[in-house]
Image (cartoon, rainbow, N blue to C red; front, side, top):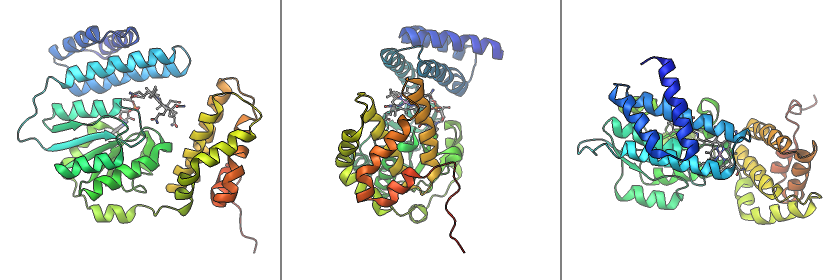
Length: 332
Ligand code: B12
């Protein structure tokens, strides 16, 4: 089948997702498989790209939140139907897949699960936002060869670190993936992962060849700066003080403040101010596309600093550092 034909099936799958029609998407995919198109091509070059295309158009404002939920539900059903057709082989290597604590993005994990099932792994798919303590207890009971952990957004790295620690306590190594671990996975080792891969297609190769050492991975993880615990303890207080100082009563701003505070925590955790500056660039773009005034991002930073400066001055300094200014130099 030519790449043009695959592209046209992809378009048809995207239409089925928009219409919430898992059945017709399934039949389209089945016909590809019958024509000998490999399962991984169907998963990653058809279904994943079709959903990403839909996601991009959703962000651009072509669809509403309800449409996103319908499309996500449809792609979940489609992947469940596809993955459900594989038997769990008795001798297959056991693996557990989950999204990090706090991460609600389930599709990357579903895709990776379906792919590993097709390769003969004994896959247990735990879905998104699995509480780290529950994950740890589950892994301890019947430890798999690895936990495959997904993290979609860098602001969720504190949750990912908790998930990784829980797995390590159960003596299970962690293979991580997803944009949350940064460009080329630069933050994966800072939060303790044993390995990071860019694509689910690479998981099998790593699982076959790696020799994970949980102690070394834990030693490579950066120690948690005290400010992170302070922020977690006083999160409600910091946000309440920030909301009280805002002139703009728009009901979306408390959520934006909360996201910004998560970004501060995550940047402290991986000791990388670029995480925060990337986040503020993204947030400024989002705010401007929603019609907020140009100074809104600066107002959010100022508001968040009110309590933060008293409780965790290093975090307030990080927040107010101009990303375009070079770091201060010590005068000779
Ligand atoms: C659908 C979606 C949601 C849905 C998720 C529903 C669900 N059940 O999954 C909902 C509505 C819940 C959601 C919520 C949010 N989302 Co969202 N979401 C998306 C969207 C549109 C698609 C994500 C997706 O599934 N893509 C399809 C997958 C297959 O593609 P992919 O992620 O690129 O994955 C590929 C590779 O990266 C890699 N990979 C990815 N993960 C993994 C994992 C492993 C283990 C491996 C090996 C490989 C791997 O392989 C994949 C296949 O090739 C993206 C934008 C987009 N177009 O991707 C935003 C996006 C990820 N979301 C975003 C944001 C900000 C949020 C919210 C914070 C929004 C808010 N203001 O509340 C919340 C956070 C909620 C939370 N705590 O998790 C941002 C992140 C921006 C950033 N970098 O900081 C994005 C990029 C949108 C944007 N540009 O603004 N979201």
